[in-house]
Length: 109
Image 1 (cartoon, rainbow, N blue to C red):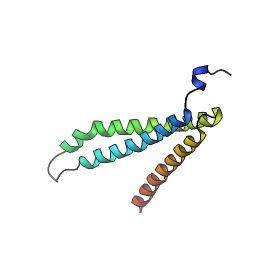
Image 2: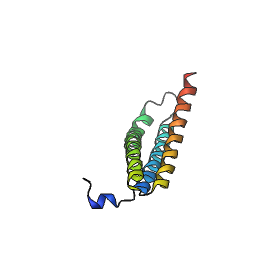
Image 3: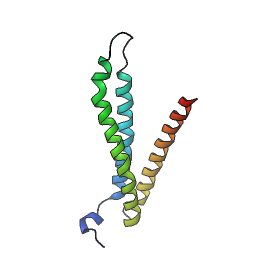
Image 4: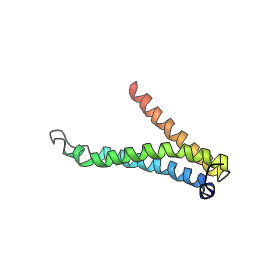
């Protein structure tokens, strides 16, 4: 095997679960930042400018943790280091993708 001994001992299931929870938290922060950017008509785009860094940070965090969680889930299953936690993380990600697809589908008509 090419992996180091320290990488084999990591709690990959817990890492996958933490990354999937971080994905949900980033989604909530992004939605809150988006909704706080709304201002009354005629107020200009000051609200959007004030929240654009929060939106960008939430989006980058969500994408990176969403991509990292399946990697950690696979490692958890293959190394037998928390497969139950990895399954919970997978369920959380499936619920997240399902919710996003429902919102996108309902907005298309």
